[in-house]
Image (cartoon, rainbow, N blue to C red):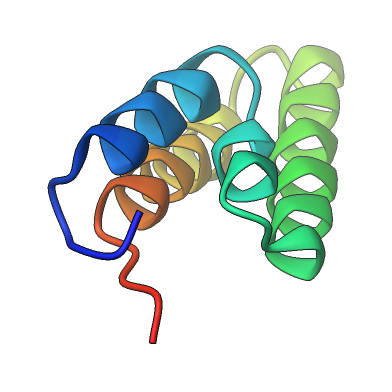
Length: 75
């Protein structure tokens, strides 16, 4: 997973699509995984109580999580 666009990053992005933060966890970035998971699912939870209004925040967070996993470069 050393280069952007590598097979590992594609797998991480797919994992993040299904479970927010799982792609970062696959890449070994535990803090990023926990933060993405907590914030994204908190936003989805709030959206379920506010009749979807908070989806304006939740969906971009989830998409950011996927893109972050896909574009990660280890140093």
